[in-house]
Length: 100
Image (cartoon, rainbow, N blue to C red):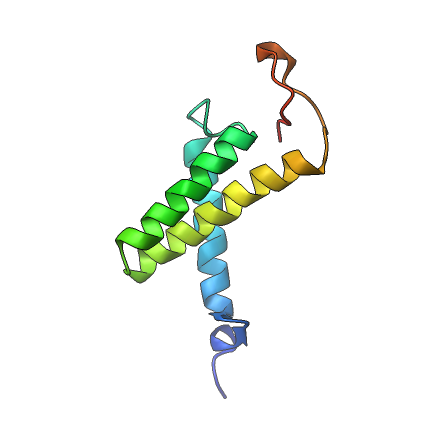
């Protein structure tokens, strides 16, 4: 019987999906310490997406690729949540961007 974590979902195995998700959680936690990156705004999302693209382009190491994928997912989440609408606004600094 084959390992269930080796099963493919699209291009990724289930194990890849779990590793990418762990990477997303770890980068999100780490970047939450940086006020202009870890605040769930458009700017934050854009910086994360650019970081993911640069990381992906500079190394073909599978662990860098996992980290880049997690960062991309986190950045895309920030951007899409802001496009969805204002769940709450950041009135403290006058921004109309959504804070997640």
